[in-house]
Image (tube, rainbow, N blue to C red; front, side, top):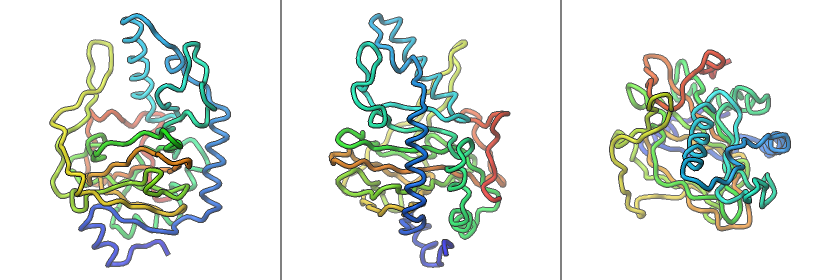
Amino acid sequence: MAALSPAQLLKFQEDGFLVLEGIFSPKECDMMREQIQKIVAEMEVPSHCRTEFSTQQEEQLRVQGNTDYFLTSGDKIRFFFEKGVFDKEGNFLIPPENSINKIGHALHAHDPVFKCITHSPQVQELIKSLGLEVPVVVQSMYIFKQPHFGGEVTPHQDATFLHTKPLGRVLGIWIAIEDATLENGCLWFIPGSHTDGISRRMVRVQVGSVGCTNFIGSEQVYEDSRFIPTPIHKGGLILIHGEVVHKSELNHSTHSRHAYTFHLMESKGTHWSQDNWLQPTPELPFPLLYT
């Protein structure tokens, strides 16, 4: 049974997040991991990632290449790398599968395994028990959190990047494909921080013919002592309110911390902000969660 109990529902409403163990089987987690290995084995690395530029103009082109690649990734399966994994010739310094930070942002639409997990009975039942009526899937990511250098994710609110009117309509689903521990960079949350609105937004802006992103508003500073860690076992799932403040630390361990995460929006009575970096496209309108 994946439906939330009244006590769990209350806890989620109070804290803005909820840790649920044992939602997916080890076999389902292994299936996702194996599928990602296949995707990585077949990946074509975009040239802007591989090129080491020397002049300032070339550097600007590289940055713009990265930005365009990111801004047009909403309806595709694309690869985002850790820093310093290529040499000057554009060859991998470490095995390709250890070089990736994440894959995004439409695994849920284009890959049969991730589509199946996203629309799984467990997820649908959970979301129905939260009272969402017409949820749509807006994006998905596979996060690697590589051993030794899987980078920290600084404190943030998902609604900064995925903004709606009214607020409170975005929900993150975070699935542990491996155990997430204090050592390998589990998530940390500030309980109750989802009730204060958001302090900043990342918006897409057009400068002439060039698209880029800007932050508006101010970045908040949060006391470390307010965060609590949420270690979770393989197959567990964390529900994440769009406005709850969360982060993860650097992975200092010898183990990766793979996770599959996707975001839903209650589309009924909700306006998806037109200046979000991510926009539905004619090729991929946001798909309905309930099948």
